[in-house]
Length: 321
Image 1 (cartoon, one colour):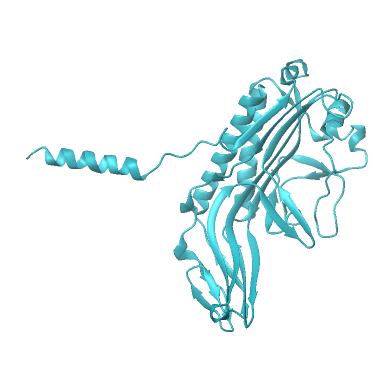
Image 2 (image 1 turned 180 degrees about the vertical axis):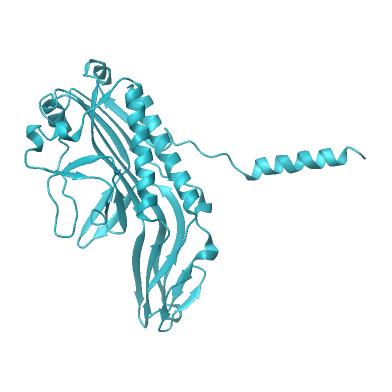
């Protein structure tokens, strides 16, 4: 009889282990690593130019559903993620990458040196530390405050222009065959689904919080933008490509801890017309303004930083640097 507390404690402990799954590791299950002549990296100068380091965060989205006799419109905005929070995530992750490189003996080529390269003669050098909302609707891009980078221009809406094809091999050649590294990551926060049904002429827009790193497709006017998490490395120039190259592209989404969002915190900021609020959707809505979704900021920072570190670790391992 005296052993029961011990057995009970053991069962409780086992139960905790069963129902609290171990944190997944970001790696080969989510990322496709491929390259050519990667052994040539060893012949490259021990210098790296970080051409791009972008971290996109999903903060806003809007959707409309319409059927005969009813329409539903819903906008959702992620609150609590201040510029300071997003910059902290980017800066710490960028410094983590820099440390991985310098610990292996690589020198980081500065933007001031890269600015002298012929390739960047008509490009604009920008300083990080400012959120860009024009590159991809609904997402903010947080470039690390300590980083300077180059763009070929900007549109009136604030979208930073890009080259149609990758020119890293030309940049590498202009920088004395220094390695050129590019990195871009995307965190999606929620999904929206527009639905309409003939039954009682009901239209609704459903929202589901689902934090993860993933490839996204967004509509920008008449244009669709596809953005994929990726890291790449290029060495030198050989005709229209590099002497060697490597990429690590995300092909399967990586889920973050769903506890980032608390369903109880989702409240409508304004509802009018025939709108009814049930869980996370509106039904028979004539006019609806934004829902404000709150999150656990510390957990969001923890989960996104972890994902970025693991992506960088996998990239460094598979590239052979």
